[in-house]
Amino acid sequence: MTQPPIDRLLHEPARLTIATLLYAVESADFLFLLRESGLSKGNLSSHLSRLEAAGYVAIEKTYRGKTPMTICRLTMEGREALRRYRDQLKRVVAALPD
Amino acid sequence: MTQPPIDRLLHEPARLTIATLLYAVESADFLFLLRESGLSKGNLSSHLSRLEAAGYVAIEKTYRGKTPMTICRLTMEGREALRRYRDQLKRVVAALPD
DNA sequence: GAGACTGGTTTGCATTGCAAACCTTACTAT
DNA sequence: ATAGTAAGGTTTGCAATGCAAACCAGTCTC
Image 1 (tube, each protein chain N blue to C red):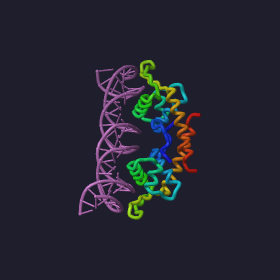
Image 2 (cartoon, each protein chain N blue to C red; image 1 turned 180 degrees about the horizontal axis):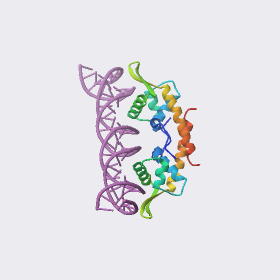
Image 3 (tube, rainbow over the protein chains, first blue to last red; image 1 turned 90 degrees about the vertical axis):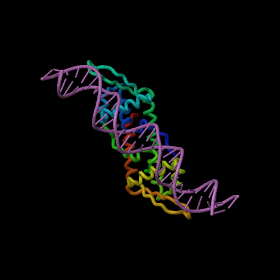
Image 4 (cartoon, rainbow over the protein chains, first blue to last red; image 1 turned 45 degrees about the horizontal axis):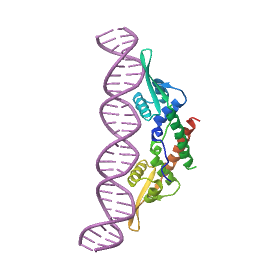
């Protein structure tokens, strides 16, 4: 056996959750992700930043009326990465006993 | 969506590799794990310690002739944990798109 | 304008993963 | 004897992480 390749960025459950949520939609705002992910605000914010730094997520800050709104989308790269991770994970599961 | 339960100890690829290797056998020594896992010695040593601290692995230090030998086994708890993790991972994969 | 709320970001900190450096014992050569 | 090397691991040092508490800017209410 050897170490299987795995995308460590998406291997973190919190970020996988975010990516999966974003995969299903064209875009989502911070509060939607906050509700759906169950993460704390700080956590969500920092994981989003990391996904953005990796080019997986695009973040746009705008306003809904007078209150700020952060809109997040999964980039093409992010979508491909999620599919790749899914395949990597499938291989990991397949290599597990039983 | 909410955060799925996942065993963080086994979620680390290095430790999952170790556990999987040990699952297949009754016991294995350090050098076997070293070769098969592809981990560095230091890494293998510290991950084994963490698995031992969690009760997943039992470690016995003995001698092969005159040279020290570290024998590792997956405990029943460790075996159950690995099966549980496999099931958790299956659910994660199933929840992923496509 | 004091206080509270909204929508986030930053800070502080304990935990991690990693490999380089180290340790101990045994063997070998000089 | 002693210097050097190898085997079998463990410990150390450090950068990177995950997390939530604390913070901040703008808005609304009283």
